[in-house]
Image 1 (cartoon, protein in one colour):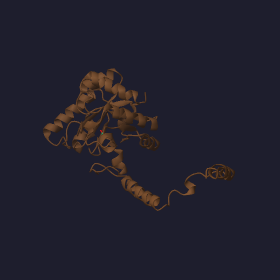
Image 2 (cartoon, protein in one colour):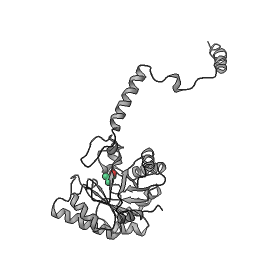
Image 3 (tube, protein in one colour):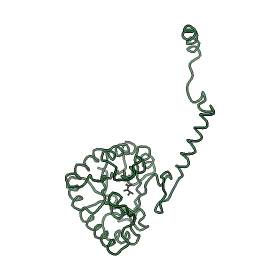
Image 4 (cartoon, protein in one colour):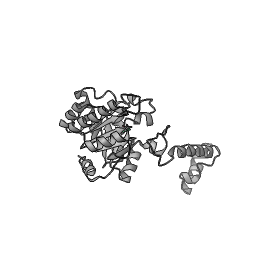
Length: 273
Ligand code: KIV
């Protein structure tokens, strides 16, 4: 198994952990070549790639398909795969779902919510778990959580319970920066923020958001490219060149050797009239 304990070591040394989502082989390959610390095959694949309207539509088969693709593209990095909605309702179901994603190439699984019992069950089966608190798209549409004393207290104690149960990493999504900082100080596992301020042990972003081809942009995101604009411009230029007969040219394909062409014309085309 790839060394997941290196993340705890990075936390101890104060080295930031960089995680990105990847859903296919070219994305994962590019991230491996860039030296990414871990790849998350997130259930955000549903909205970003599969055209679903919600993460809740993502199936275990979808997750296995995309995990396999990411693993083919990136043999070495640690891959964490999301357990999708309604695939971890009982310990038995969580175990079966997690094993399925392990067989598809995941080193670890992530699930949303405070279920320390599931972390322990998966741990006894040798399946490492990344927790996910704050905004949980599978469970709630309201984005920011943790701005009231009650919510902040709950997220803080849930984080501690998941840590004690043995998560190797904890994603904090859209949690207020002060809460994320307090959790980061209070738990052993490295925290990975997304829209949770600068004090977490690492960051995760959604690759289509980073590349600039997701439909929406978000305050928590930084676009490092404008791939959406490049895709639209490339499609439009291709279309106009095909229509104008400018593409393809002979250089885009192959031609027949002269003697084969001569015989083809004499023996086949002329004979057949
Ligand atoms: O599915 C996903 O991409 C995620 C990240 C936003 C953390 O869970």
